[in-house]
Amino acid sequence: MHGSRRPQRVLWLVLALLLVSGLAVFLGAFRGSSVTDAVDRPLSADDMRELLPRGRQLAMAGDCFGCHSRPEGPRAAGGVPIDTPFGTLYSTNITPDPEHGIGRYTRADFHRALLDGVGRGGNLYPAMPYVFTHRTTAADADALYAYMMSIPPIAVANVPHTGVYRLPVRGFMNFWNLLNFPREDAVTAPPPAVAAAAPEHAQQWVRGAYLVEGLAHCAACHTPMNLTMGTDVARHFEGAVIDGLQAPDIRAATLGAQGYDVESLARFLGTGISPQGTSFAGMYTVTHASTSHLQTQDLEAMAVYLLTGEDGRIVSASPPPQPRAAAASADSAGLAAGRLNYLSACAGCHGVAGEGIPNVAPAMRGNATLINDDPRNFIAVVLRGIPTQRFAGDQRMDAMPGFADSLSAEDIARLANWARAQWGGQAPAVTADTVRKLRQAP
Image: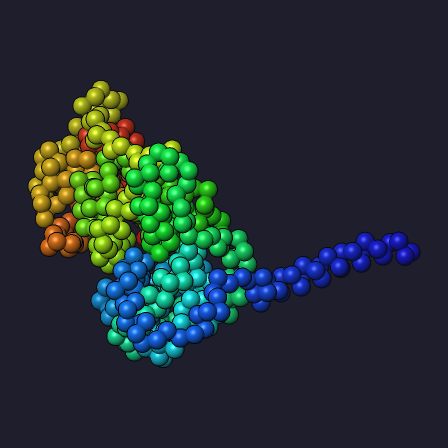
């Protein structure tokens, strides 16, 4: 009799341990902190003033205003929607307004939010990219704090979240953090491969790694998510679909195959314009509100880091792909029809030879959107168009109309196949069904 009860007791003991452990995680018992006791001391007024220029550059590197400013709203007042499968999050007011913003944040509060993902009201949601900003040094966190406290306070209430985020679920973020918050320190020295292969770029690589993997949080968009909606570290920079568009693969080999070198990639980050095309959608926000404000040496450091291959060498830029449209193909009739679609709908702005018109339309010849293996972005732009865009240095591109209502799915598929074959070296693989699915995408 007593022996038969033993398995039940073991089961109850295991369940009790699991319950206690789960409750401990929920309450944050295992949550570590990167914030030291030293930050409990407030910064002096002189310290705050001296840190302002450095803090402004860091705020630009982190794209703080791009995420926390609506296009038609005041800067840093929040309200930008971030859609998730569980509801919509809205970016918050990060001005020093004491009621709606971060005006009551102490130096230590700010460090905890930036480095630990914990705000004054509890765990932050990872729409705030603390899994990346965690790598920020304490000195740079101070500089950011000083700058953010210097911008004008704006009394704009935060927009309530929707869906599950209306419920008290912040404690569950402790479970998510156990799986997705590695708390990695910033790299302070180049890896042996870089030190051996490109010692002249070693310090640039370190600075680039600090920015790209930290405040700039490039992986947040350019790396696929795992099943828990965390960053899939095993597929670093392979590209991901964001808001119906592809944040493209930005691994070194891919960037080199698109013709980028350090100079052209740094120029693209600084202006939003390059021979490979112009930034648009989410990347337009990044270049407009963030990277176009960075110093040249930081842009070059980011380019060095992104273009460094696994062997430690900076990849060489490849020449533009050879056209495939003139080659014999089972779809030669479709390619011919695609060329006619291009001439009638696109050539007036982008040029018969794809040369583009400065400050009107980007070139198609050598355009990275056509070189990409995934045709999603080219098709989406043809369907939806792009509004007028203004870039650094008083450059601009005119609005491009969408053709969803004037071209059929078959016409757009033929256009995509011809343009990708002509200027991207891609085989004609786009079908009308591909276009229909993207036409229906939100």
